[in-house]
Length: 519
Image (cartoon, rainbow, N blue to C red; front, side, top):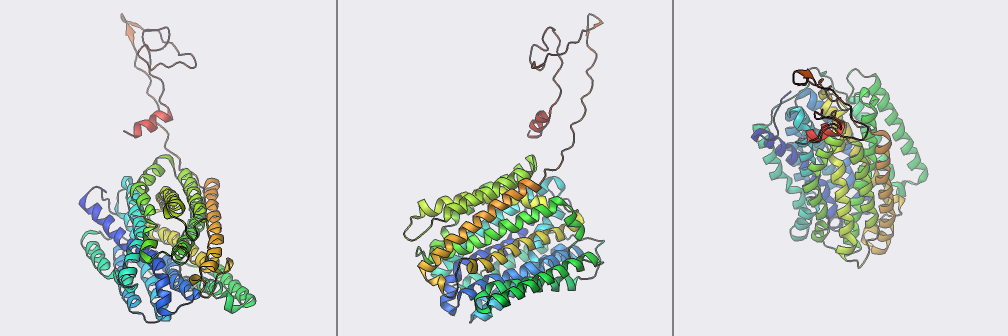
């Protein structure tokens, strides 16, 4: 395992490659949200088609990202990362050339396969190549810059969609992919798990894919399937999910190490991830459509509306990682989702005729603040709860949980709030569903904060070194008389302990140790 310092040229290039790679996937996901209305008009798509354009990508990503993490650990994290970037770029080309909604959905699924290879690799590279003391800051920089890609996506996509074509939102990935591959091949050291088995968990990957595919299909197609068939498919999806868990328990080469979930910290962090990212995915999906359908924003203005999130992530995400490393993850992972919930609650009131600065800006700003508080501590907690040799698998599990949460929320919420067909083009119908959806997102985020407070624990800090006994002090060749300070007195002042001309420093406290660590 490499031991690179963050401040070196190589360290900066590693961060650049990781951010560009994961940023491609994050940027693409948010760009698509801004482009959905124009895509729907151009390809004559229904509400269900728009859900599939979003969820086809998430389905492949969530199903295969675990396998992507395992492949990186076994055959080289940089190698699999580069393959994923190339695959993703070529699938983006197919998206840009699609002529029907069906072709676009198929290309989006292929994009998800590439994302499943590159996304866990970007984070596991950071975890495996940086020295231990720099990992928290490196993860904070990665999450902050990656969050910027997520937030800048609507702005870049909006500009391309409004002044060029929605197709360029996908074609943009081609030059980004080329730069990422060049930096990774020239500057990122290769790391892998020498002890990893060489077999693939094909059965596990298949069961996970079928479980998510069935549940997604049932939720999106609820209106056409009917209640009975939908319930049947959901039960089948649960059965495949149980089969996946059994296979992983019994396999000699599992895609997911079952022992990871014996850690309460790891399990709790992933439960919180599921809730938060379900709300995150649905919130951006609905807000972007609301701004265009109900408030009449063009794609560019709809993208610019989320820029406060960019600012918060740019200036505060890395600091959030440092604070989490100093005080422990429990408090940031509790406060962050609750702040996000408040921001989402503020956005429930966004409606026709509202002014951006009074209706939209406060909500997205508060949401961005909460996101910058929670992202880096959450990521660091997941990785710290797993052994270094399983960094790729742990990263893959957390990414899979995040994408599955977004996938299921985007699939389920339109039906739950009564949206279907071409409702995304009818302001009155969509507005009613939007308000209900945002309330649900707010409750999910608050639930993530409660989970963190109840289940996340701060790691134990090493005990401060024992104080050495004071040296013998003499006065005129005779031992000086020692005095004990009464309760409430300090012996650390210039006058020493009360009643004596010679004082001894007060014992070192935990507060003193923490203060010393700041300098």
